[in-house]
Length: 561
Image (cartoon, rainbow, N blue to C red; front, side, top):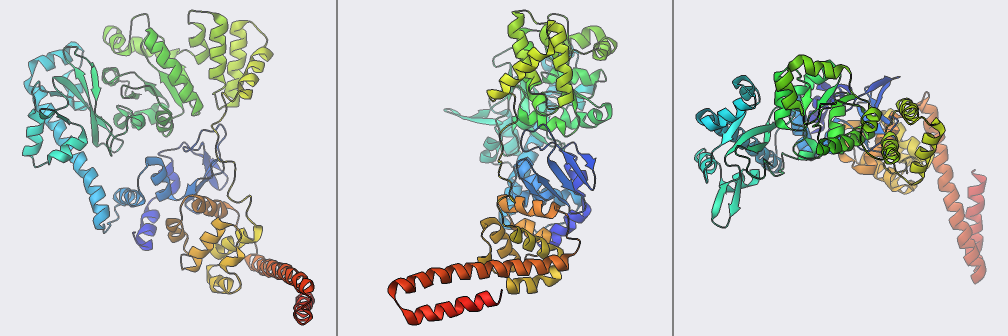
């Protein structure tokens, strides 16, 4: 565990609002910043970030913490990994333990291995005329090939394996990357006779590959398997190059595949990205929302493309994004349209994209069934004003009263469709005695009075297990907020961040006096209840000497009220 001083040094170099803004679209709200929580689906912002206290808390799902907690939860990494990532980002030097070094070492080894594999594939692309002709035929020039680090996997049994082992990598490590496969006849290269597309993370490291068959062999596209550095549900192809352009232009173009993205970038549409050969996921929606709120879907015009548009629109709308759709002529896709018609024609299409309503209403089929599909999609829109706008638009398209559309929306809500995902409804502080909340708050606001507070309050005075656990940690010496957050997990961390976000006491000294009176009063009440129980037992046993002693204690407690 890094020292409190190291954690504080990292925090001092990285403002939590700036850091979380890389993941969540935040808006200023008084002294704090607010946004839609990245950890659960919601329609109104309940995710709060405090720059003064350098913490976050979601009042919807009760998650909370500091920059380290956020990175742990969002990126699904361990606490030491989060510290290491942020230390690297801020330039703070860490002394790693052997265990941490081993975990970091495995990831670093995989990243280096992928980097060397990319160099291998690029060398072979330069030597293979057939692969270069394929790319030239698809309009991918040398400049684009270098920009996206394209390569070629030769049609051999184990050329990459030999190359990597020759560079000192162990076979077990290469197997973990998924770049080679263990078969009955030995270990062989996973990708053979394929155009290779390196897949980058947001930091610019190669974490996987996509391979496209040159001769149309099945499967046409093949991706790396998931590893400790690669999860395809959380990666968008081209985002490492597109993120700045997306922020600058104010919207993202979602394509279907690698070549669509590369062709779009070649024609100046550098805000283009694509999922990795899979349907768009909720994680993709959350990922893109870190950068922008507007998305244009640029998918193929065939049946599969239209189905993909519907799926993507629903997911993106649920994640609070505004969605438009680009309509292509029949049998066209982004890649072919750009190569045939050029930048200007594509830009003209972008000037008037379809709304989700227009897209659905242009589909062939039973209009009643289509209308129900549209209503289900509308129900996913988090922005109530936009939802109302779409209700009005749909009623006009169908030439029916808005009330009928609204009624259908209500029916969907009753069946549980189109509503927010269920989250924990039990807020950490709701069931906690007020005196326990105040003691924790006062310990943080008056650290100089901690010894005095510990003198009149003990763990036994806490009924709530979460507040009791926090109090115990504070009594053990973790009174600094950073140190305390590092010691807390789950519900304790959520409790703590919610307490921290509460307004400080205007008169903490008076609040402390009141707290002392309240705690002592509670103790006295418990003692009286226990005495009353013992008195009844003494009466039943007719033990008059004990009864007299107990009644004397009772009178003393009542007199000292």
